[in-house]
Length: 597
Image (cartoon, rainbow, N blue to C red):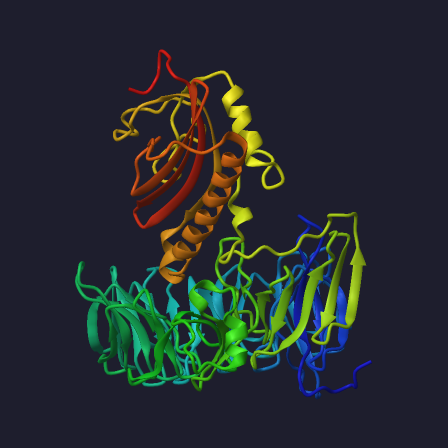
């Protein structure tokens, strides 16, 4: 068992359950030892408990919430609906089963009982809270120091002022810690004062800045203005329609950073990320580029100055052996790794970062100090801020077991299921060619068997479907002319989609290598399919191509088999930034009432 005090909290490590069952979370110490087996459905961020240890909100397998210590033991049994990470004042919001809110101390016991209809975080000694009478402010004992009387109440700022919305007029103003109105309620929206003594306020649909007396620093003119950060800067979206800019302004209303390209809305570790849709870098609070645009993708830094990043350029001849290993089998020889806020890039010898269901990189964004990477053998490696593996989660080859192993490969925990119950993790970005195959029985069924089935099928009218522009999913369903004015008409025979992929514009904007990677894989699929069909049906017709449907790029290979023609066509189409790539196989009949002209 770990000692009663630890220098660092344990890491939170997700372990996927049997296919379709979701994740359970384990606790692994910084020394690589198992602290608690993966039997929790959620674990929040560990915070110091004031006694030399750490405490975190967590939930059991039934989703009931409580608090854990750094040894993995329940400080407070999981009987609550919701628990939240501890704040700097040592309090955590929680929601009881009856829906009421209270606050717990770092020993897991309630400090403020759950009697509140709503409760917010504490800022500068006070927290906004709501009863049936409205919103007001409580101190750390739960006593209302400003009675509940407002329609809404915001956080207090260092200058002792907080924005409130009046119950009668719906207008926003600012009150002091005694509840006295300091800035009269005349605004439609109000955000906290920043360290420079300015606050963003909204009139209609435009934001401006006021000082502590409520006088205008900048009259409302911005479509968007965020609250000020600790560095005294606020993210702003400005300029007329068609000439928008993104940037940061100071408490005097001066735009100190202005970007026509994309810019993150938050400074982390004194730096803010920017990109031009191709290359990412980081600026400091003066707008100076301190980490050059050398990364094809990067995330915001976490609180300790770590970010997952993808290097922009292929490695040169001077690259280290470590970097070369990390870039092996990566698109264009580029490496994923951990970028530190001092500009140091640490290549990681794994295939790619783990993504969520929508394909976005998870990175270090959860505050646990780990980033998950897909390994080259289908496992998940959990990497620390120094680019080192802490542990890995991997399924057995037959899918009958799941293991949590330390960085040396020693098993920390193992569970069993029916054969095939656990699946290796498939990469989302660097997908293997077989993962694009969609024809019946793929990838185990020989595509030449599919061709034989199509050649023997009763011919009928068909037209290939576009993933971007068609509502149809069935090629045998007639297309509506008004929905598809550029359609070439129907063919006569039988067809099947061999492989397909859809690349969203947003993903391609962030991961520009995706299209090249997919094109390369579809080239492999097409070449393999041509080889298999040639082995079964003989050489294709020299110099003959047939276009089943036109796009932004297509090619085809044609075989004559008796009276029918077997056509393999690749299809590439762009629409509104989205990209589709398909590979079709069709057996065309020589004639028919609905035959293509």
